[in-house]
Length: 137
Image (tube, rainbow, N blue to C red):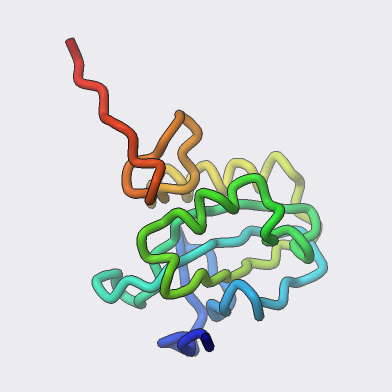
């Protein structure tokens, strides 16, 4: 079944960082340098563009970093809107130190709270991973 085309043809900005035009997971072409990546799903309610980030990551070489063997891939495809496609956008930051990339990703995660970046067990909002919320006693 063919995937629907991306609904926008413009770059996206998260936390002040300019990312490339979102491309489908299968067709995204990553730069051969260090930088950031955002895994996204379509969400018509997301503003100013319809791409909701569900995961932020970084790599010393973005090429080959966003693949089905990524440790968080299962969380990406478990998102309820992943059925309409996963999208990826890149922010090339050549010659950027790993510690700097980690700090940028931590700030993006703090600002956007993407569900697939959560590491504390099952994340609410992911199909098959919803689990129960614990109530404070």
